[in-house]
Image (cartoon, rainbow, N blue to C red):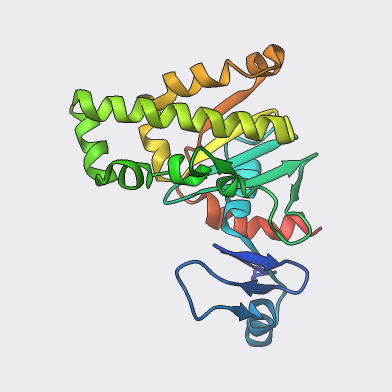
Length: 226
């Protein structure tokens, strides 16, 4: 069966109607690219373009831990902090594909993703995050303490998500999810300080088990368009 559509996830703001990509992170030359038009002219099938964190959330909703839920937030904890928002079974991208940019909320002396991402160790302590993870796996006390601190920050981020969208489920993705065992305790301690105790008791948090959530979600943008 031939392909019916193409889905693309990009780390940027997107005009999802016209498929125009703006200011792609790490590709400075992509200031304004009509990606949908270029791809449709080449392949002659519908093309759907969206933010990569949104694609992660859609992938988890259709194929991963989000199956069976109506309201899901996918948090991508990698070099930064991104999020995709599923409401009533549909992706909510916002007017400018900017919904879920929690990482840019003001927090302490910077923004959330400065503290709630894999870059935390370098940003705050000038340490290599990979090395900290390896040390934590070996039981190094200092590395484990750093992850406890990271967990507190992530807990703050999750509370902001809960106040904004009150989801049933939050799914953690990105490279930092592999260290969940090291930061979950302090993360949950912070979540339990949420003003509405029933919400804190009911919120479900899962760690993505999919290897290619974003790719699957990009493909599933076709479903969202139906």
